[in-house]
Image 1 (cartoon, helix red, strand yellow):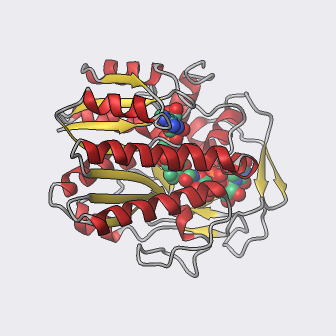
Image 2 (cartoon, protein in one colour):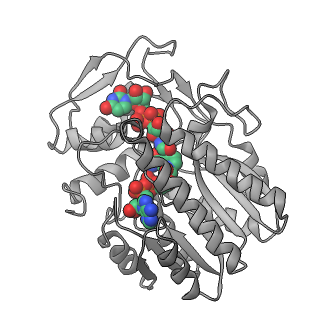
Length: 339
Ligand code: NAD
Ligand code: WQD
């Protein structure tokens, strides 16, 4: 299958491109490199011994987006990763987030429609559930109140894609709701390379361990959780990447518009992650307890059984592998790709 991968140069995109190439798919990546470098994709080619096509283009530009589709006449599906994802920045620059994520998606879908490509896998997020009434979260939970513009772009794009299918049932839409992706490919050659100071827990811990940052602030230890710190469903990025291949296979059965949680089903606290990382790396992760972060919830983990039943997908890697692989990547590449 020839798959167009938007945002394929990014963290989850590179890991997914690797799995796609390894499974014999043809891959064209569209990325504007606003949050990535091409080095990750070069390494994907080296690791697989296969090549992909890279087109530097911005989805916000309708002409450039159309041109990509003209150059890919045999493509049959799109995996749509491209988007801005920093929660805090989205509150400071809402127009940037709405424009990039929504206009980009509209341009993409219009080009797909023109070229008769009506199969899409979209990177949604557990953030669309807001603060869930209970855990584990199933896909049938009501979509919650989003606390920031980033989260709202995900909820809005889900609506747009469901509407597309409602208007034209030949569109097939799979909404993958990721929980907390972490880890790196076991080679340590590709991994997460955040711009500036990381917002997310795992890259922050990794940068403390490697000496780039002084100490971690643990945002709150007074949550109603077993140790008082936040609980999340961390999922290894390689498991997540493999989930996209199962979703592509599902699209061939013309499933309509459907959402799947991609998580492990296991909650893990911030303190548990710190200790697992210390064990995996042999380093001490210095931390202080700080006030809660605005917008955070106490506990969030998936019920991933729909994905297991309908996609034949299940996360296989646990917290230990997530920490070992993150450390392998971070210690081999202390400055990431060096962008
Ligand atoms: P990332 O920033 O590493 O990858 C996104 C890629 O999209 C980047 O390479 C960036 O350059 C590109 N991009 C952004 N806007 C673009 C545009 N207008 N045109 C072309 N390319 C553009 O992020 P990631 O962690 O790999 O996330 C991939 C997707 O998954 C995003 O949509 C994100 O919102 C979603 N997601 C991520 C997480 C997470 O914690 N990492 C969780 C849930 C959902
Ligand atoms: C995890 C836990 C923090 C950093 C975010 C987005 C979500 C999705 C995944 C894209 C929380 C604590 C964190 C730190 C800490 N992304 N923490 N110190 O907030 O669950 O989800 O990323 O869709 O939309 O909101 O992930 O890694 O930021 O935080 O104590 O320096 O770690 O309070 O309990 P989160 P996270």
